[in-house]
Image (cartoon, rainbow, N blue to C red; front, side, top):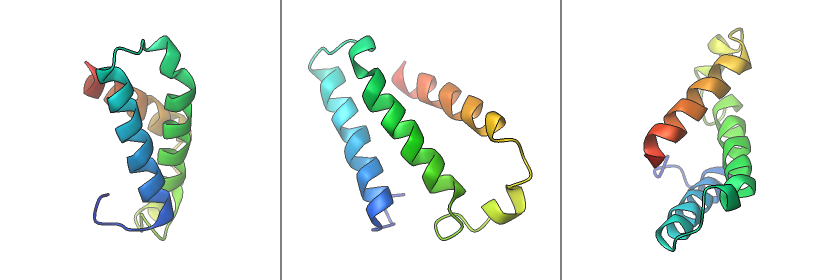
Length: 80
């Protein structure tokens, strides 16, 4: 994603960096819920956009619920 210089990926990277910074400064996970919702929303927007993810056209038939669950699991793994 860092190779992309589009506004969407730039915003997503900035939000993830902000979350990491807040965690390092002792903010609780409860206080980060709004930020995490924004990150999830931008991530889903990013992976659903054919301009950024050409494979999405082929995969659009897969339920979005599967992607959301997978992202939440990945997000939990990255935070632990």
